[in-house]
Amino acid sequence: MGEIHKVADVCLLAGKIMLQSGAETYRVEDTMMRIAAAFGMPHSHSYVTPTGIIFAIDGSGPAKLIRIVERSTDLQKVTIVNSISRQISSGELSLAEAHERLKQLEGKNLAYPFWMQVAASAIASGCFVIMFQGKWSDFLPAFVSGGIGFYGLDYVHRLVKLKFFAEFFASFLAGIVAMLLVAIGVGNDIDKIIIGSVMPLVPGMLITNAVRDLMAGHLVAGLSKGAEAFLTAFAIGTGMAVIFAMY
Image 1 (tube, rainbow, N blue to C red):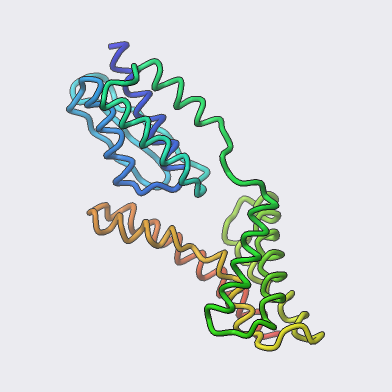
Image 2: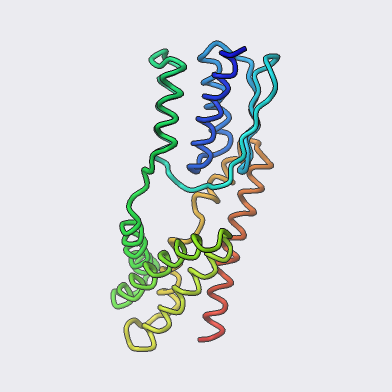
């Protein structure tokens, strides 16, 4: 029985890391069941939603539940868990070694430094303006407003643990900065500047995962992720609507 609990703990830990890092629910379930099968327990069952994981090994003890509160995007962690899973399946890692590596991975922060994220968002905002057939004169205002908007997203999210208000404030702040820059003569086409500025806030990966989960038959997870993406888009749109009402 102790061995079964250890296998379940390893599976749940792998699933938790993947789900918190932005993996699709069907990928999380598949990885957990593959790990259990590699340790000699092929009859396992997992049920994954964006906010929780339920896992049980058939006929061997009660089901276990993990609650997922914080979710982000860290595809490097997803890749590492997949690599660990493949090593387990090929017999390269023991149960104890797998658990230790997953615990180490859980405690690591593999995200890029925050200043680099802000810089990348600013550059992406300027590039989106050009992609949407804007002028090079609009690159700089989109660069500035996009970077400030992304910074505002992180700042407000640390103060208020509600994504909707953080995303609303970020889009509003990006729009205000863009409007002020155009007003003082830096930039011309405010529509394209604002569109480029808010593109780093758009939940592209969330929408993609929602569609992939729906196609894989995970209707609850797909619909819930789709609803989350809709709320994000609504928050961004509301912030922009306020800006254009003021403009």
